[in-house]
Image (tube, protein in one colour):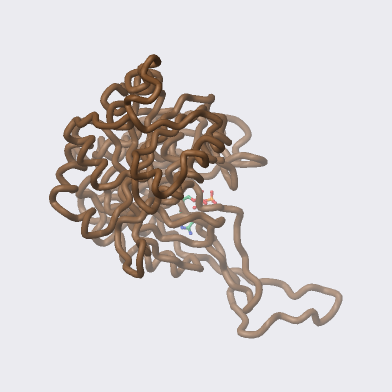
Length: 411
Ligand code: CTP
């Protein structure tokens, strides 16, 4: 199940003929578990990898690939016309070429010509193919016409070789599909050429070799921010402290850290060349004054007191020393008892930290931490205040990148 829980929609899942076709089964399962009605339309070669029976059993609907199957129902027109979204996963180099050039030689390409809904391609191929100028041009052409073509993930390919070209994690494809269902224009390719740093997760401050002081941050919001920025074309470095079990976002460089001080060093290094830095991490304000090198023993009835010392404020430091034109964005988790209480604290925090934008979440039982949805307000140093409606964390991410892209285009 994905983060979103939008109403059930009609989705066409196109499957291209590559080894990653087997992962389409997991994507299909996720979509049907979210309640969507999914018509699978494989290419003929995809059926060499996964049989039609598998797709039929998982979708509960017939699977056809030829325009001459079931002619009286004119499926090559009906499927595209009736879809709320077409997702193609995996999209092979050949399939991208056929679609870019308007071919209609099978049911999937014909469907893509009649579809007027959002179209999302998740490419998977060898690195050499992905980087070939022909594929680069076809991807550019499809993007220029409004289709979303995901950046592939890097990692192990079919053989022992590695590099960009892997299908993004099914969970990531599902998250971005739900995002486009709620907001069809959420993934424009408007951050191309921009360098972005995002911090995520909760820092852990060691007490001794087996214990630490930590917090409840899952890292989901930061990961969603990194994922959405990368799919909008940015070069993203994600500084990840402790998180829930989240897959690496496709096309993102991930740097892992433990403590607030490690996070500070990693963020400041990456920020030196960045256009935008977003501090979504829950950074511990305090750490044990002394991290013991051996396990603290229970010596008597009274627990040993823990003395704390203050950690650096990374956001304030970033804002104070940012290069010209760099945007610095903070997050504020507030537990004010009313809207004005929350916003009053947040405005003061925006001024205190000196950042350009501050995303404000109300936190407390069942809000913001460890949950899929998020909402709040976006406060800007210029005094503007925008409501961020409650929704999937990827939607909040898209709204923040909208505000960032708008500001970057002005500078
Ligand atoms: N932050 C940071 N360094 C810290 C603490 C927080 O960079 N040592 C960043 C967070 O990543 C976030 C923002 O500051 O973007 C606000 O974090 P929050 O915990 O809400 O603010 P605090 O400064 O800790 O203020 P307080 O807890 O008193 O509300």
